Length: 210
Image 1 (cartoon, one colour):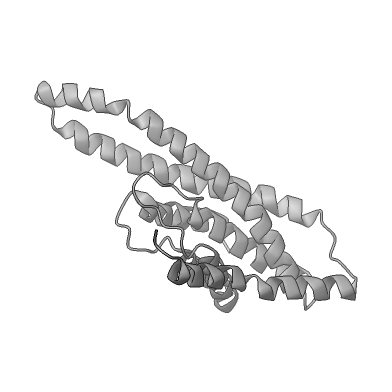
Image 2 (cartoon, helix red, strand yellow; image 1 turned 180 degrees about the horizontal axis):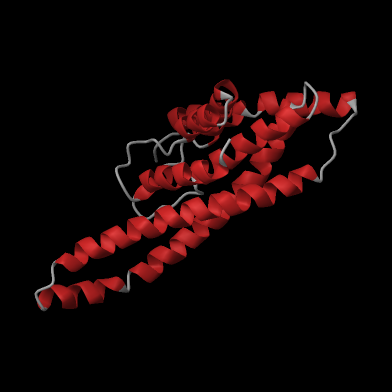
């Protein structure tokens, strides 16, 4: 598994979120499957992608709403789970899956905050573009669009690369639990987690319009 290659892939997938295309390849289901495929454990990647898709089922970037980054969150949670599931004994999947999700979601929130602040700063380019158009430089629009795409790609790839190793060493410090009762409780918690997504779907149908 080459983290540099995966970082480049995450950078490209992240552009689909709000910058380019929006072909839905930035959804957790797709990202999880891709991370699993490239890291050598497609079934586990797909399984994590399905789980996170259920949690993010109603979270769609529309208009000014910018949700926690699904690409970085899913990619980190999948890879941490895959890596540490190989290192520890059988039956530790649920423990590392929950631990990976618990660490990855705050990272996605932090990256979301960075992206929102960047969008606020980008509004300052409007005046430059207007002045350029008035002075006969309409190509400035294309220039700023390309620069924005390049910046988002590089930022997403670097952020993923940095936090992958940061989280990896944090998780590595946590010893594998040996209590059978603790692991059983973790298993129950993990398999109940999809119910959160299912209740969101049901709630969207049952909610009464005022």
